[in-house]
Length: 246
Image (cartoon, rainbow, N blue to C red; front, side, top):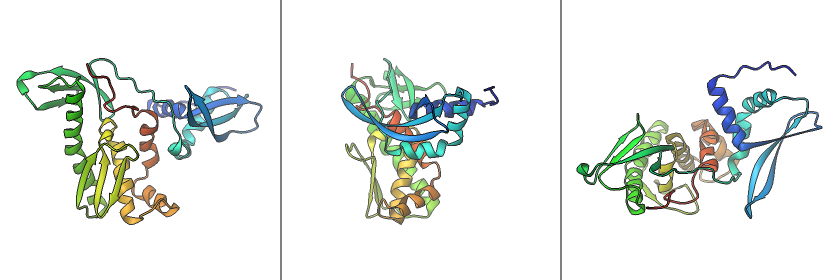
């Protein structure tokens, strides 16, 4: 089959992400078919999405199908589990979904300077030490999360009494009595992923359960929910902080 597709750079970026979510298996199939399957890797059980594809289809045809069905894939991947692929190089800090260089600058004492253009964090203390890195994450989460919550709540015209942060093992966020709690570990993820969790919790003010009505409401107030949530499935490090202290 001739190549008839022309993908933009944005298309290629989306396709590369989707290929980390979906395993393509070619065989004697008549049509494409998605299926969730469990598999064992290093004695752990994971759940992934399989795309069964006809042998007569080339890679470009498969890529076009993935791109066309990306929203379906994001939804299917919501409860999938993948081996963590995020590796933190030496002298790098994972912050808001990006890897930052670290530069020690004693003259600024206990403060931080974050240069988003050069992806560099300057600090008066060595953030490559576990205690200092955790303190950095804690302060940034306490500063950023409430601002994001109140901004999102304002868009929905919802009243929030308070925003709290902490390190929770079993959930990314919770909502009760007008109080939003967010897992401090989210500071490692991109802002749009943080927002996806915030809108999830705000949606609980409107629908206090996980019914179909809840997810329908969530998609209405934050259409990119499943797409933005997928970072947590693929890239959130298993340990916090996500590197060994020097």
